[in-house]
Amino acid sequence: MKKIAVLLSGRGSNFVSIKKKIDEGAIKGEIVAVISNKADSKGLEFAREQGLEAIFVNPKEFDGREAYDRELVRILKEKGVELVCLAGFMRIISPYFVSEFRNRILNIHPSLLPSFKGLDAQKQAFEYGVKFAGCTVHFVDEEMDHGNIILQAVVPVLQDDDDHTLAERILKEEHRIYPEAVALFCEDRLKVEGRKVFVI
Ligand code: GAR
Image 1 (cartoon, rainbow, N blue to C red):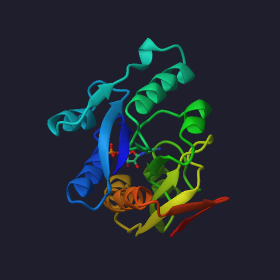
Image 2 (cartoon, rainbow, N blue to C red):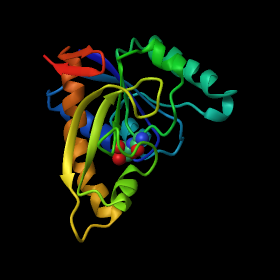
Image 3 (cartoon, helix red, strand yellow):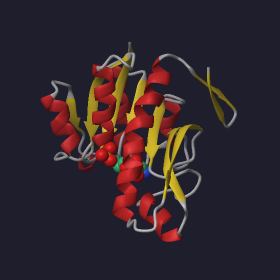
Image 4 (cartoon, rainbow, N blue to C red):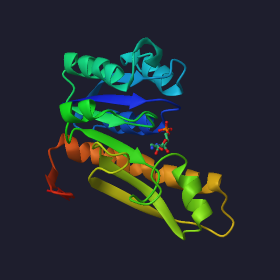
């Protein structure tokens, strides 16, 4: 059983999808901490309801990004965390954090990377006029939305979509591929070679 921490900032639907697969026995892991930078995030509330350890770490109490991340790393190490899942964690991770958990931090991003990095990726794709959009699970490195790609899923953009209907279609796929990537990690089935990640 790998020890997993989930970091989130908002509603936490990706966290819910991972928790569900753990409860079904499809992921050989256990969530030992759910951490948020927002006290009122729905995801933290859900964690508490589930009896999981839910921790709010207030950015205002720290002097800058690295000081904040040092506190996160301290908590993660104290709990023996082996895998960190960013699930709508809307903060950029410092190089210090990345170096402490190299190839052990996963993120889900709602676009087919390397297209449409950053905020509102679904809206960026919609407004660009692409015919296919999607989502990506990747390892986190020092650059935003840049680390090695683990899994991607593609959805069509339909004529009568708006950015919200497109985001909903993408989210369904996020809820499918994120737990799948976590399951692969927990079974030691991800092999990193340069930019590539192989499923073994
Ligand atoms: C998800 O769509 C996720 O892909 C996105 O935030 C949403 C969080 O939803 N993440 C990013 O844009 C990261 N750059 P959730 O809180 O319901 O999981």
